[in-house]
Length: 570
Image (cartoon, rainbow, N blue to C red; front, side, top):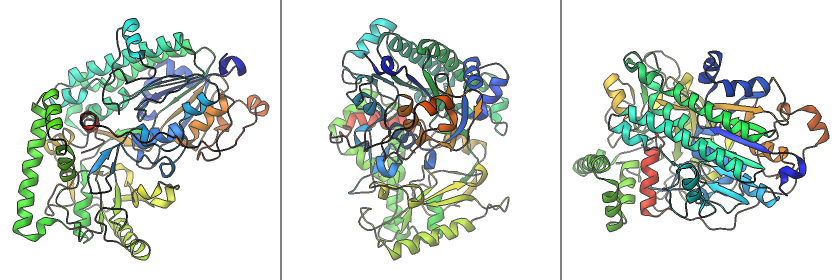
């Protein structure tokens, strides 16, 4: 007998990666999203605050654990290597603490998990788990239990992990990208519906990632400041078409869920990018906090030439060579990928004189600290605090030359938002772009060039095809609680992504570990149920005993290319 049979509670979580009420509310008003509209009409809603930097890997890991990154340790899809300034790509095995579905499994409940990011390699749960976009591909070990993907192929015709839209976008075929996204949504719906109706479950979690992908690459077609929005009516409908297809799928899943409590959520929101660019490392250079090797004359000039050749060669290899050829290169030259990435991620920096740097994939700055960075020069303690305070002061003084307004909004120190044994890995300074007027782009390997720039149409499009897409993340996503034990027609405030795991556990009658950072969303739950079912807490979520399992070379390349196409890495 499953938990749902014992206490009458089941929970369905539908994730819409990157979804935003900014798009949903107008489309609901037009009658375009009837199933989501019904959930909102009959349920509870709130803007949902993501994790700092609204990074998907960090946000989904916080949803999975109910904890901040200082505890679970996942800040991004990659982390800095301890022996260099290069990176290694992460997966679920690096995450500290037990997952939501493991806690449910250990309590005797049945779980089904589909396409949640940072779930590869799959955990052995009391039920089944199909990993998400950080998976290198579909093979016999891709899902748990083994044989599940063969079952889906036999019953619904197969499963699409990722539609490969970055390849279509880079080839100038947005039409094929949109076709692939819609087909991926339909396949995901069919798989979820089959599994919901043919496997026991008390908790079912599935994520549609197509919302995030279509927003990344098609937002320019709905941005009135962009010429693309006036030249392509077909692609101006792309984001809406994906939301509509997902809404159809949600109708099927809601019908299969019966009287379960339903949570619809996103890991972060979304909005348009900006022409106004700040090259963070160029700014740090201009302020004397960062130095380039090109300042050293001829050796620096040679480094710059080497970087340029390596960058062009790397891009051409990725564009022209078929996948099998690239995999063969990586097997024959196993250290090549790491060496190339180490140069291209943070090119041309003289670490012996650099006290601060940014990876420029987020508005965040790291202090080059002794004992943490491979060639750190800043002493922890007083010197660290002095350097950080000076950077923050100068950052707050920085003004936009066109508007005269401050470029940075809220500026935060690491310890203000992260706590726990893994907090040291986080950026030392996190800041926001005031009113989203600016965006970060990679500085490259040279100190010359302005650190502030307004890109023209041509430069903006070129940037979007290589580094920063036209749709980017925002801090606030969506939360909707409907059916089951949620209140009707309620609007609540202050919901964070940390609150979802405790709320799911509460609805399933499972005590909430005391080391979770979130709390139950009490204001959104029916008062009679709250009165009759007090929130129970106790113990900690504990640690997972398995050691981290790093990606091999082929897996790293597959994951890197997928994330690069979404703008998670440059």
